[in-house]
Image (cartoon, rainbow, N blue to C red):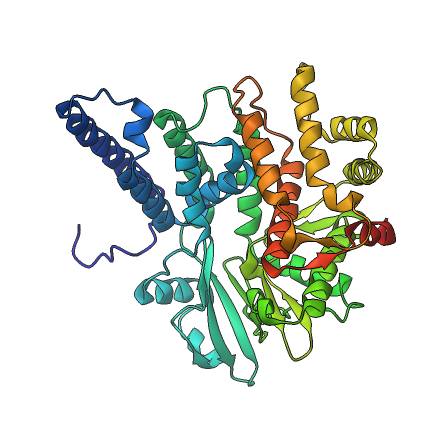
Length: 437
């Protein structure tokens, strides 16, 4: 390693990122050879998959992708969220680790980024700036600051090189997974990869995220149940997003709240989901628990991070309305027709595969068929959806990637189910949908 280079710095150039991925591949291969030699010496003939999916390799893959941050880490997150039920458990575990916060940039690199995008002397804007981040994720990290005018701010700073490396990182990680044999050759993930590139380019544009945040603030101006930060436009650009700092507790703190309050919060989240789909045509598709905080004093939910906001075309909204209304009414033929309109089924899909997909829809829409408040805390719904997905995924003739719009909506709904179950909340999901549609 060259002197003066921080090993924890985010690799900023395309070459350095490619070298990091190359060292990852060679390290994994070296581990495989060592493990294979060990097992041969013990008289066993190991399978390739057993050599690949060792704990050492799992750690190496997760740690290196987390070090790269950006697109490399986001691809892992997308695959773990959207295809986790269809992947080998060992790979799912590797990818799931990437949902945790990334390691932050070292201070020297952070200062260089701020100098590059705010200019020398940027500190004149602040009476205080904390160089220790409040949070670090796949695209950037967040710092607390106080403006000279006394306003408390949250400053999101993008990691260097993320935007420039998106396409190459996505392709390199996909190639690594393909060559490793971790993904089935018959699985066409190209639509997901193309969509990952498109969304990542948008998420890496902090001006676009600021616009989404301001749009959602306007859309939810009539709702006293939600609080969103305000954009500090004078300090915001494509690589830095400055917002008002909103006080709140982690949403998991609601575990200690009375049942009635947990039920109210869960109901408001499902109501918001239906408004996003059917009223706004714009969905914040990232279900990370960290994107929700709770203002206990005012009983408000704080909504954060609108980089993954996704617009849905009117035709898609109509199809999803038909799908959910058919599911609520137990109309299997209606579900099938609506799912085909959305694009879930390939033209040559086998009848048994079609029926298996419809079975999963009916399981997933169970809260819509339930009369009154559905108790997520006492339900094993998530486990049944997972088991049904795994059973279908074991049939390699089925491998099919649904449309990107559907995958991101799945991601949002699955996240809400998990949060509702975590909080032990109850909600009349069917009644909430009827009130919006």
